[in-house]
Image (cartoon, rainbow, N blue to C red; front, side, top):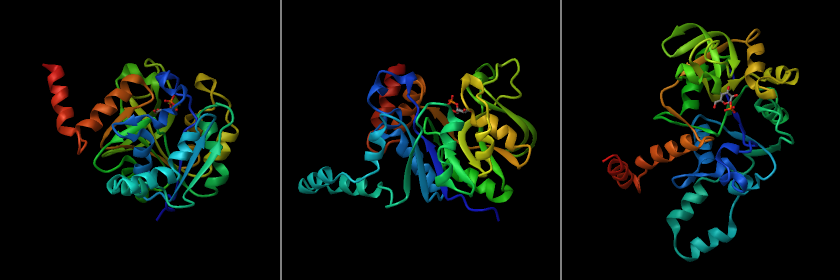
Amino acid sequence: MPRKIRKAVLPVAGLGTRVLPATKVVPKEMMPVVDRPALQYVVDEALEAGIEHIVFVTGRNKGAIEDYFDRAYELEATLQLKNKTDILEQLQKELPTAGSTSFVRQQSPLGLGHAIWCARDVVGDEPFAVLLPDVLVKSKLGCLSQMVSAYEKTGGNMIAVDPVPKNETNKYGVISPTSQDGKLYGMSGMVEKPDPEVAPSNLAITGRYILQPEIFKYIEDQEPGAGNEIQLTDAMAKLMQHSPFHALEFDGKPYDCGSKFGYFKAVCAYAVDHPEIGDEARALIQSLQA
Ligand code: G1P
């Protein structure tokens, strides 16, 4: 049985330039998708998959994230006084247990690989998950839970992939699949943001990873790649030469909340399923189509 995945790294240092000016003062991860910050959905996905400790890699102007995962005594007291016990209980339920979160700081925006590397001491010498909070995956069983089930059989490293239109490969990391067993792929390589003409496939990396701790030494030696950033994809491509890698085509739909339209689509998708406003949201969308 492979070692249990207990820790998850969530890089939240990005500037959110694609959704400015909203992100001038609000971290993009805190933008609400209906009534919860996008980040809460990703944390829930991690917890559902059995994650016990979350390492947030933060940066400047991200203080709201730390505050969000802390108690809010004044707010709680006011809710108590006004007898708003439902909301109060919900707030308290979603609070991480004491000591189950860490915050490390990425001091310069050197890339996703570098952000993950900043978490190395907290992760230590054990396999871990990475969830990119820009991507919300809407699915019955969480994307990371699906990956953990697959990993329990394969061990090694696992990434989530999703087919994208061929002309969009330059927005993603893309894998070179070599074998397929149902939804599980073997692969020989991966490349960050390839032009469609040279992309090895249309299977894009979706922002969910299970990685062995050896990745840190490959990141450490990694030269900047696409966009002049230290890319996680480049370090994974090297680790793949020494450690088994699989890709899982998960069940579910990913939404890229880092882009304006992706964020809008996520809000619509979560609104129509929301227990409080779902019916009205569906009716509104239908009326707009009429
Ligand atoms: C990152 C990864 C890329 C992945 C993408 C998923 O890119 O580097 O491999 O496909 O997330 O959203 P970014 O969107 O941060 O440029």
